[in-house]
Image (cartoon, each protein chain N blue to C red):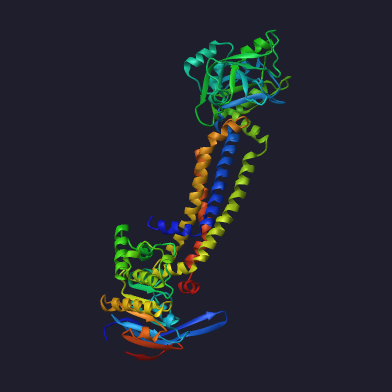
Length: 385
Length: 228
């Protein structure tokens, strides 16, 4: 700490240069935080997807429906603890740009299988008891200003009602769910599968099955058993763990994580050059002063530490600012992106990674000038006044 | 003469610049007594500053021995030399060599950063050193806000703040007008006479050398003559 005033004053020697470098690093870490939030958004489902949950979809595509009668057969497979079904609704609320997932489910079975959806018990009971009832995630309710008790009209895109009671589905908002962790998608609407079947005429079909296995170690075995049941049938199935399914889904839009990390790597490499150049110039300008410090008794390692300290102060301070700014900015950015990224925040592990990168960048950018300053001969340094 | 503080024995110093070698000191012998004020004179390139650097442990002899205060400087490691300098040597430079980003007080405090003294004690000692050189009222000034003479006084305060055994001054008045130079010399004489500091000063100026208790002349790396 006693060297801090010296480090600070040295950084302030060329204010403009330090400021520009500081801002470059701060912007880079702001961008890093933003990209980490995007990456996390793409991978959020993967992180929380249980290894003990399987998804059974149509072998051709998830948009192909499966017979509802499969449910009891799946439940009878050894190793299956529980199973339910879900169906993609794909309706429009007021305007097509107001996209959010709407899924027809069996309420109690869904909440049993997804304990990460937290619903107050009285709302849960009301949902189970209300045929037109729906629950929505907290973020979705905030997005549209919905409150429990509201009636939500949704226009279907392909589940056209056949009951002659108009084209619109009217859902009674009976509850809100919150995610048990920040990675849980809180932008979905769940409603009764029975209500859907009532409107369209019971077609005896569902979108996919969610299966809970008793022993995650036997997940592959159970998945093969389920698919074996329906092999050579008109609707063959493909069963994978929910995690593998989410990974596959994320990869359909490209290897997002690798792409984002490549961008981060390029940005940091450029920042390394900028910060390294600043430190190299700063030390080169002060060659004689390094000689003076050594004359006064500062050892080579102490001089090395001073230069690295200066570099860490510059990069660390800027990185800290960048990370704090993105952390503060994310809540404001969330409404702009949550249609595409329901989960959008900078995870604590990304902030920790950012801090580690800041230290590494600080050491790397100051490393060479610090090494040269440490090795500098006093007589040679004083001669370069 | 008092007991020798520094002993230089058969010292050679050779610099290599590419394929060329330059013999700066040629078998030089010298003793510096404790408490004396020694002036080293000679033409440019005679080896004065090189000798001063060897006495201060800033450089090592190519051959021969340099022993100061019982420490054989040629045998000490870089780390040992640095610690020895911090404890025993105060340097005064021709161009002051103050850090422009630090106030006078912070410049004087610099050598004390290497000690375990608390900030308050470091500050007290820096203030005392500035008082000794008559600049207590300029403690919060930056070098750019000081005159050349005042900068050199701060340089001297920095040299004495750790209560060194010896003060090594390289052309301390070389960048100053005669009157201001005279004040700096008065200060060095006072440090020598009143505070008992051994002073070795390199100078071109015969009037400055006259203030010393002994003057040695170097020429082509050897001592040419001595005068009291």
